[in-house]
Length: 82
Image (cartoon, rainbow, N blue to C red; front, side):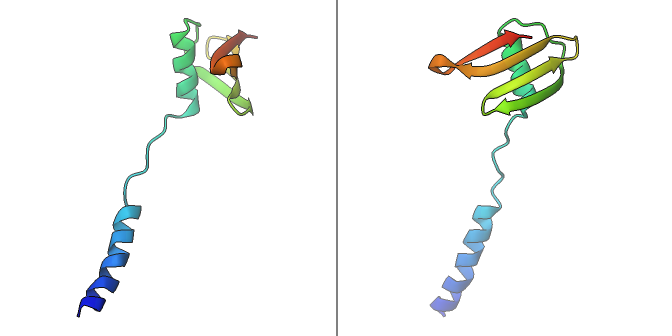
């Protein structure tokens, strides 16, 4: 009887583990807007963003401002106005 219980319990544990909610990540435009806001850069909202490379984005704001946001030397966020 124990082997049957074991064979039933293992798939149930696997199912329960896979049913755990995944970590919710913040969408990239929201992250970019937060970075711009924290750095005091004017930007009403993100109209578009284009990924150029890993951690390198071109951002167009709804108010017309354009920025390049990337990770520079020393792992610091750099914002260049375009």
